[in-house]
Length: 255
Ligand code: PGA
Image (tube, rainbow, N blue to C red):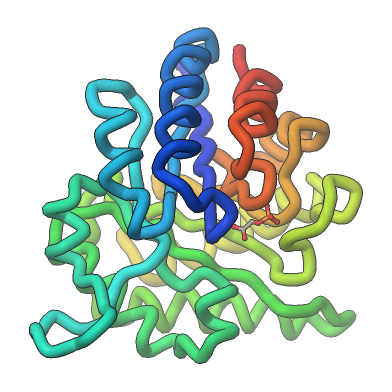
């Protein structure tokens, strides 16, 4: 049976700042990514760059996502961007519960509200989970269980393709490849997350949910993380900020 494509999502955070750079990035990505069989690239730019990236990737296989969404749906919310606004901007997925947002006070309850809103708009949720630190007695496992359980509680069936989980241990984010999680540990977590998902979703549906790893992914460790880590893709931060390093990751994974 043909193995599903590997998904590589670039989370631009606030690294890419100008429409000019974003435009050149998408043009290069379009040109080069045709060569990467079996790899699907996606980008999550800041809100201000969404129109540029949506236009730049139109008609390509690469999807565009937002880095966050408002938990609110009513109108008098200065500075917020709702799921409906993202949908009309042309995004296909939304990152929810990134650790950098959780660190700014986003609770599990807020994450669940956002997740519901993204699904209600018919968009795909890229739900981030990950422990802040590791200990010897496995507390981090219950932490992940709690994050997943809370986000999915009362959700009912989720349509195929509408949920992606990104496992990003906070202690491994924003460093370099040698500080990333070891592929064998990623594999353990991928199994654990799958098992946890089966407690909240229909078993067959749960086993189909793609699991990504994120945290200091670079071109030098991407392949091992996919192969030995047994994940369906990667969520890439700093190494997605320059098109060369992002393309180097895609090319390292090409079949
Ligand atoms: P990093 O970020 O690749 O810079 O570690 C990953 C993320 O936070 O999504």
